[in-house]
Length: 86
Image 1 (cartoon, helix red, strand yellow):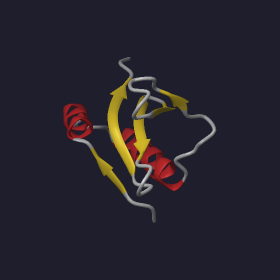
Image 2: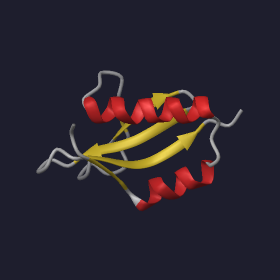
Image 3: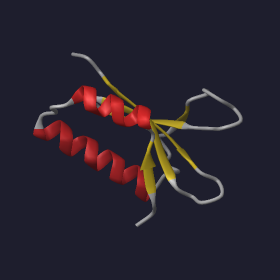
């Protein structure tokens, strides 16, 4: 399995979302695993935060996940987690 890691910001945002309902937790887990398995997903779109350090968004309702890929190592870095408010 490819390697991945979380930024402190991602972990803080995840902690603010706790407790997640089981179905949301399962959707988030599946989305993260899908990104790690194929970080070059066709539905990703650029975040444009920093052109010198490109990152991408993937939307998996109710979440939007920002991640990048370390060029040298290929490690997926999860940077930001957003949850749509209902």
